[in-house]
Image (cartoon, rainbow, N blue to C red):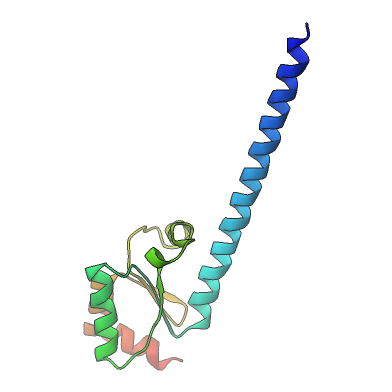
Length: 129
């Protein structure tokens, strides 16, 4: 009979630990979400990137050729990069990089940026600020 209370106590401790972990995870997620929203809406151009990604480099080069200076978040150089990428997945439905925002509007990735330049959409978005 003595084993039942010990087992019950063990289950309770495990449950409390699990709740504590999930609460911390939720706080980290909320923090990453707040960070992403702040970056998107506080910068004329924001790029969520990875430093080694050729598509990210291409997007930064295109903007540089247009004499635009984006705010760049290099996800691979941040401890919370994975959480930020998860927030971007929830926000735009993509887990890939780069993810580019202009004046708070999601442009997409590198190919989308190139198309926005070619069809004049990027210039319109930049002129509205």
